[in-house]
Image (tube, rainbow, N blue to C red; front, side, top):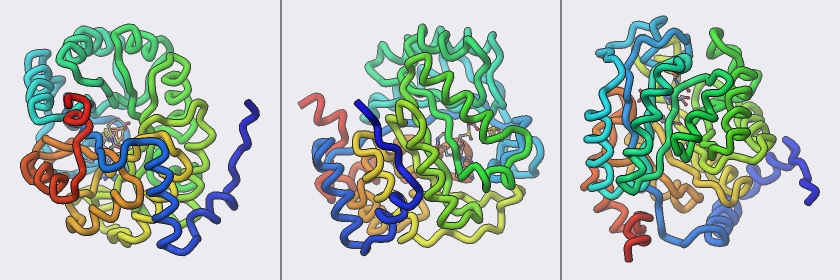
Length: 321
Ligand code: SAM
Ligand code: DTB
Ligand code: SF4
């Protein structure tokens, strides 16, 4: 089938329509592709904290910045599996391993290849976010049974240059290509609120749409300005702009999970509900924080109670009924 390629103007037309029209279109799009009132719950585990050689301006785990985190080395298989078991008990369906690496070594890929099948045996989907991949590594992860690889574009190509200098937007696209060529499903999104303008945000969506096949999972993060990083003083993005970007993402990627990612704890529960109305259907859930203590999450109990109030069912419950 001939695929019509999107343009920035077409994306802007979606984004700039009246707010209520945008939200309605997004919610209708969601309903045409997913069961209404369901949400995916994904639990994150930071398997290696801090000491990263890259200089991403948003990240507390970079050696170039002076954030206050306590680094640790790669967790053991037993530690990782214990966290996966807890995630399963809490009701998560996906478990994502994050590591503060520029990219993994072959030895680290081998270690993770032993752990991934064990996580799958628990009945969880597996995801990992390990940084830039070297040739052959995506294939190895695929052989181990990895379902998803997270590697974000994070911003527009133009703005990304002013946020990171130790790797390029093209380096990220190269890893993304390796992931899709190895037939691993792609989780790829970005961060809003890093000083980019509206055009940068829409251009990031355009870049996402050019990936073939497009991401199955799209995390939309709100920048958490972390003390000690170059972006520590960035003002918070307007929540309505964030919501509009979620809705636009939903419309452009109808069958992808759109994840309300970093920054959820900075929203009121009412603002969070607006994100679900705008088509977000996935959250990080069930751990104390995302990757570092700078990004706390509500407790699993509090999240489940809130979703219950909205009549939104976790996907896992749906599946088991
Ligand atoms: N090192 C790997 C990489 O950069 O791809 C994986 C871990 S990295 C911490 C995963 C993602 O976390 C980044 O791509 C970025 O989108 C997000 N992230 C990091 N710091 C953040 C912050 N302060 N606020 C919002 N998102 C952040
Ligand atoms: C993604 O897009 N967001 C998650 C996940 N992928 C790995 C991580 C957000 C990290 C927030 C920074 C922190 O925890 O310090
Ligand atoms: Fe942080 Fe990942 Fe950048 Fe390393 S590569 S500084 S862990 S965002």
